[in-house]
Image 1 (tube, helix red, strand yellow):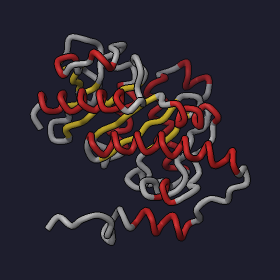
Image 2: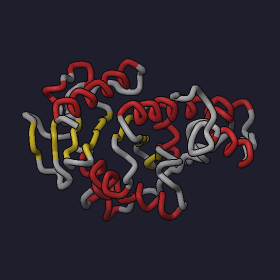
Image 3: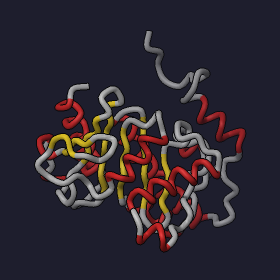
Length: 234
């Protein structure tokens, strides 16, 4: 992918997230990687989404070295780099502080699969990481945030292609996808199901949830080799 296209797509993703109410001011960031070149386009640190232009987007390599850009890259860049190294299927990463998903993260609670709407996008409960240790917080904090996400997926045996999102305890949500459109979609859906789940638990705190058969039926009818939802590309 050409570098300019990479920057334009990252900028467009930020504006869509802003327009959908998931990003305000400087809260959050999007990055996208060109796996062939290893170049990553990411939001500059501290620049409000509403004034962001493609020319503002910073390009870094997999070590975080700036290749192009007049600004410093996002302070969360090391987190994105860890995830790109660990999750081969993730080509775009979205981090927001959207209201309901962040509320679940602040509560330190995984987002349970309570119904078909959740299962259409996420195969099971969206995991929440453990709290970070004092050593991790006082050390290379942003890289350690990525490490605790990777640890969570390993310990819970989650496949990041089937579960393209996570809640970082006391912080907020990260979502990803094969491209920018998919990553933004996953972030938007994550926020909506977090809101639905909050309302559901207020109505019925003992809600049992979807159950594995219903969850898997809804997820795999839209994902994988046997998917039949939507129109064929023929």
